[in-house]
Image (cartoon, rainbow, N blue to C red):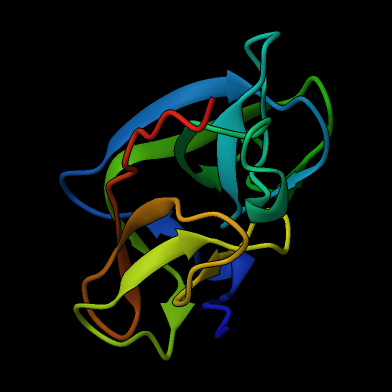
Length: 135
């Protein structure tokens, strides 16, 4: 598996990105892949616990105070579709999957196959989650 490198301080939505605001259900770092928990908050997605952490909704991109993470109960902007900058060494055209490391994107399938999106360029990831029913 090859984890996609992301620098939280460089993460930002690009033109055309669709952004939604959520409350964090736990600590979420900017650049993390998130899912909507049963209480409506977003939490880090984990490929090894995919039955309980899907569907993936997108990638966390900002907090109102400009920090690099949000704690439980804090607001968090999430790109649910579209381009996100702040990655490095991506292979254009490669798919990005939910990693077995909570919150991360990987270029190889982890325990379960859940696509987050596609590598648009070496530094830009295009969020396009696939909704899969693992029940």
